[in-house]
Image (cartoon, rainbow, N blue to C red; front, side, top):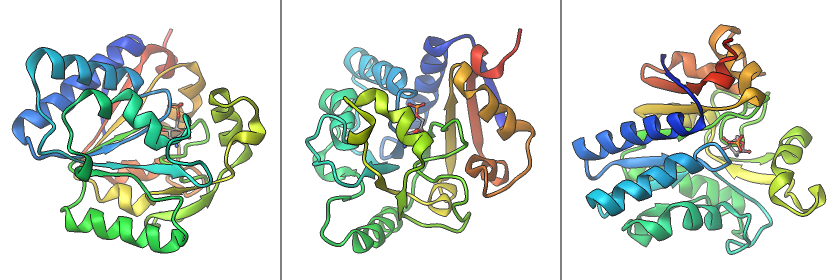
Length: 241
Ligand SMILES: N[C@@H]1[C@@H](O)[C@H](O)[C@@H](COP(=O)(O)O)O[C@@H]1O
């Protein structure tokens, strides 16, 4: 696990964008795994800025998102479909038919999960997976206790996760209780993983990741087994004085 030390959120975002852009330069047909949440917003801003300034193209890119809520329409402002449009896809030249986000509103979500795994496989898997981390160690929406062997699956969200995400909704009761997420095994099949960690609220999670044991009770701990993980963590998340 390589650790890149960033000063603050902005520095973390710039450094993350540099990594993604360098991967895109090496492989314009990169398969990118995107994350949502507050953490990668700055990275996406820098990707958009770079696209406008240097015409870095996404026309050959295929994208896969980690997760999507069940029970929100795709055009609900807090759906991850809307998030990705607002924060990235509406501002770059990615092809609509190359965007994959779990079809959480399917009549048959189990089949949608299997179809998502098929799409990942058919496209040759993810080259560069961007990840955030929940304060309980969740990655994607894989809550503590999720099997390390899990593929894309339906999850019930922990109350702490719903509470953390309630800031985007009017009340916590509006936060969905379930989601579809890529599983731990699906994430681990990515060729390279870029984990972004920012802020004091993630300090304990980062400490656990770096120094704690590998356990399904802390999903991110599996990342130690992956041969190519880069963690970009800012000063507050590292908790250094
Ligand atoms: N499903 C998302 C994750 O993909 C994200 O990485 C994490 C941290 O979110 P944030 O970056 O807002 O702290 O929790 C959310 O619930």
